[in-house]
View (cartoon, rainbow, N blue to C red):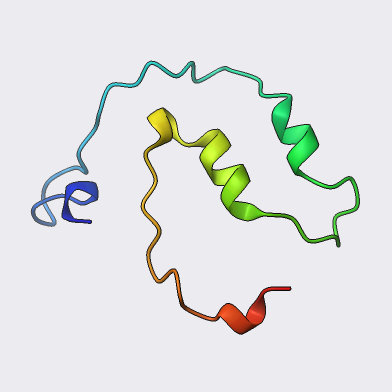
Length: 69
């Protein structure tokens, strides 16, 4: 987790080069997200589809599990 934040409040967060195109369009997201805004969907699939280089760290994974359908 510490690799995601700066060493102190006067530093900028660490930046990594990525090979992902910042202007990419991902039609797979159309399949993952339901057309109806009130329907549930698997957020982890969406996150893994859009993060750079697949780099994602979930914090409080077990928090509020009762709030999910």
